[in-house]
View 1 (spheres, rainbow, N blue to C red):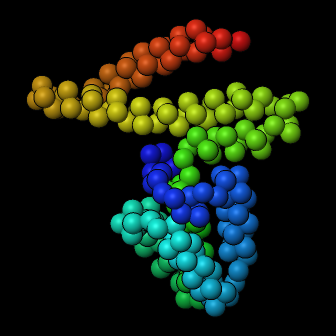
View 2 (cartoon, rainbow, N blue to C red):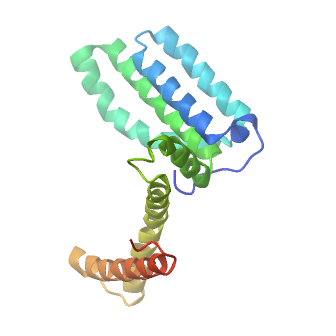
Length: 197
């Protein structure tokens, strides 16, 4: 979901994030309940049509789906042994379609729109949940994942430049120290903006 949004002007791109989340939930549920390969084939055609409507580059879509194929390479033979080929095929198609729909959502929806949609969903529960704080927490979480990846990359590059090889501990210590420093700076920034209570 992080950094995979592909800008566009298609109908799928212009559909509000909240509507897309609802459709995603409904479609994945319907697909999960299907036991017929014919029905799943129809669902696959519908998902493919949605990708065509969204005008997404094939390579970009493929990169989102290919990681699940590694899982299926192990899961399908096990399913064939214990449940037969039809159960294995049904499981594989369901899983690929669910991942494809999730990829369609993330490729056509900016993270900010998703956060706004989550806040809108939580507002009816404002008596128990502060939707704005949950939105802020989600935004920080999403931002911190690539930030942490950058820290690890920078530490690895620094070690490589010094010609240093070493243990996992020798890598982990500078990463943890830099991550804690970044968290402290982030905390100071939030406190300065009145988020300290």
